[in-house]
Image (tube, rainbow, N blue to C red):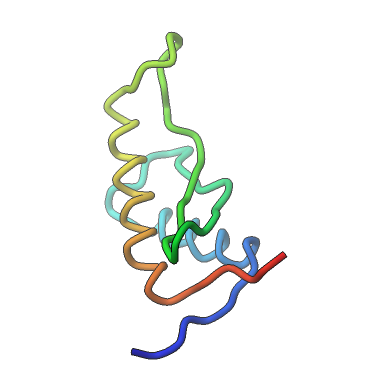
Length: 83
């Protein structure tokens, strides 16, 4: 297996948000706002489209699935640079 590329959080978010916007399941306003690395897995966070009571909506599932997709694909390729 090849080594992962070390990347800044800013650069990784640019890549992730480009992937989100090009994806078939993109929803207007969906974007990754932060990323951290936990045990070699990239964890993306952003707006989850919760309702006024803080409960999930149909869009919440779509966002969760998109962030899971990003984690699955980008964790293989990148690691965050140490700060």
